[in-house]
Image 1 (tube, rainbow, N blue to C red):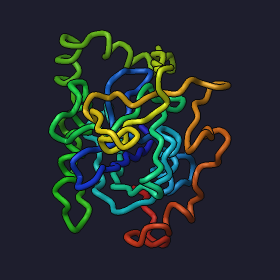
Image 2 (cartoon, helix red, strand yellow):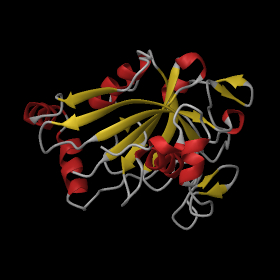
Image 3 (cartoon, one colour):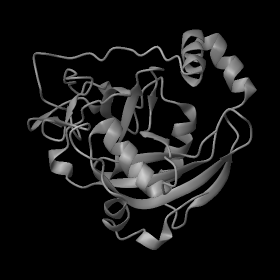
Image 4 (cartoon, rainbow, N blue to C red):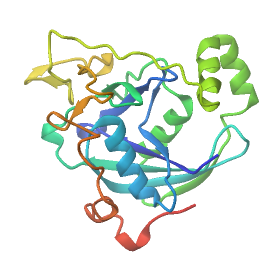
Amino acid sequence: MKQSVVGLLFGPDKKSVLLIQRRDVPVWVLPGGALDANELAESACVREMFEETGIEVCIKRKVGNFYPTNCLTGPTSVFECASKNAQKEQLLPQKESRRVAYHSIDRLPELFFPLHKEWLDEALQDLPYPVTKPIKSINLGFVLKNLFLHPFLIIRYFLARAGLPINSKSTYDESSSNVCVHGYVSDAPCDVAGADARIAPEVNGQRPALGGRSTADAPAPSEEQALNTCEHIPSNEGTKL
């Protein structure tokens, strides 16, 4: 499998974390995806965060490199990110995401991908150095167990892997365009754990993001922006596994 990246964007005091619900397999995951040709992992993480959530981020630190032990996973770099404009975030799904929401660390959704929970726990340790670890939990036993517990999810996963995704429709609440960000909607408390961030309708296959723009209208942040905005990772330390 291709090398991938995953991004972690925490809420205040690291009490919540940004998750997306996939459209092809409707489980909650950390934002991320595969690297493009000759792309640095840091740049890919910034691009994927923007493409899946509409939020522009910079790289705060690398959590670690995780390598596969079988054909079910691929090498993955995990980064902690920082929002470039946290006060004006608009959590609006894009092409690959059904929902986008901050979830309380203490009340994560039931269908949260277990491997991403491991990486979240790794990030919460705040180690001063990136770790390098094998991916052991995703194996044949994991597939067989979930084939019994969640057969339709496993079938949809393998269909997506085969290039035949069954994409769920996003729900849109026409009664409100407000978004639940860090526990507040229009300065009033809301339920970040309930995944109730409002979702805008698609326009020409894209949803608005970043104050009304779609990710199709706004170019993804450049490699220079991705690597130089945060001080923790200088531009000459791009990562390739």
